[in-house]
Length: 281
Image 1 (tube, rainbow, N blue to C red):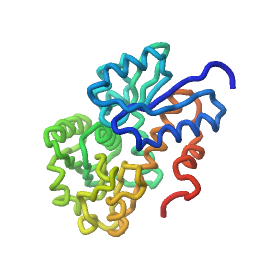
Image 2: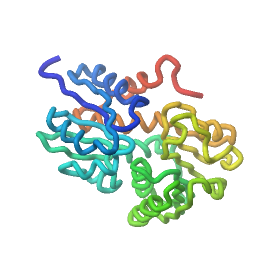
Image 3: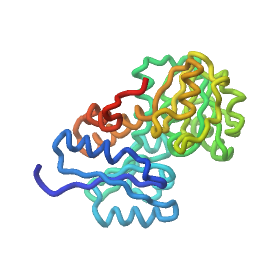
Image 4: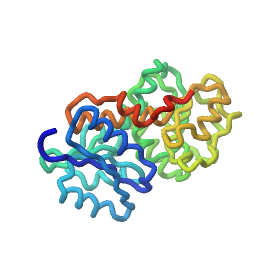
């Protein structure tokens, strides 16, 4: 390994649950790159100062997670088209002192659905959440043809309305409802996406198995635990499940490629995440 070490990181709060450091360090090791990746807890009221600190140490690049994906845009120098489309950033690259923001969640989210050859024609979608991750989901879905409607369910209905407006601007028919009323429409939906942090701390899902349509697709972007309560309910309802770790790998691979210009070693990243136990059944 040649040259000085490059440092990358992830910022968010909470951050102790993040699997990105292990996954990205495994990717760097697989290609013999002299790079390291660490996690920084950054509370919401310390974001500006933290970005300034990252500039001062000449960080090579970083990922952004809850709750900073929208607010961080204020402190960047440039935005890639993906970040503008999602109105949120999850990846930043330091290009000779210029902090440029990207959104790899868009590709990260949609790739597992493409691998399953999902037909979006006439699809009714229920999206739980209206934060930075949900914005990427809406941006990704707007690129697919034939989606009939996206219903955005969120605790803060005003934030849901803001996201619905973004969706409408991208050509998606978008409606809103309070999160606690999600089950009112879930049985009609062909795709249910959880883009909230519900499940991260093993909370019960807002949708039980009786309100999930057999043969529908249930996608929980929470990746730890791998099997959330929503995923359990989906399996019981005989729905197709998409795991959060699938999105985690793909968005992380895209970030790796932005930073290094090299194809990401996805198998090494996946092996780090799933370990000796392999994929859930």
